[in-house]
Length: 279
Image (tube, rainbow, N blue to C red; front, side, top):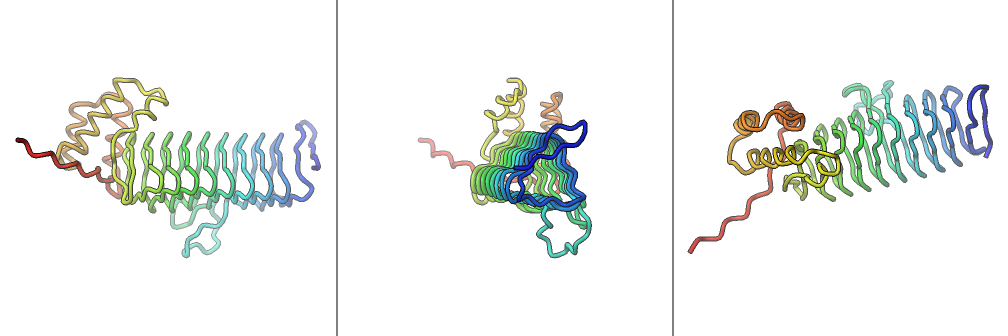
């Protein structure tokens, strides 16, 4: 392991087998392991750690204190036939964890031109974030799960192992997607989703509690769920009733705004079990 030091900067540890493009910008206290390849126009922030065989292609900007396990490929060309080598980017925030063999694509000209990931996220082994995705902060993408192009994952959302999320789908704040779910419509904030095809099966009360949501707000979200999925109202009617009866908290206001702006339409609820005949 070689070290590199610039006046006024702390030591970087760069393995002698690593290949780093002359235009790459490497921050302070960065560790780059064996056989890593850092491409042109890559910026790696202070305190980042790369295990062996990590490949980062540019243009990519990475914040501070991110870790990349062996085999991760970051900032790769988008898997889109329309992409023709145009200059597009990937921007990653601080304190993110990318485990073994994770892949993250840059954007496309047809999309945002940029893939963007916030702070404090974990992408577990073999997870995939496709071109033009928007990932918030404090999210978890579990092993083998994949976000297709142009998806949005809001803060504190969790995508279960091997789940597949369709292009342009938006997953709301603190929503939780079960393992191996097939998600083809937008998932409202705070909801629990499972199945193939995926359906909303309830409210992510545990996640809300863990993230400090007040009990009265959790109760309001439960009531909003019942209005949305169990009242028999259509979407516009349900939104109106939620606004009339429950508005006032940040969480309910966010839910309503999400419902109003859904482009793909929201995911359906789980079919209710028929009631037993009364004697």
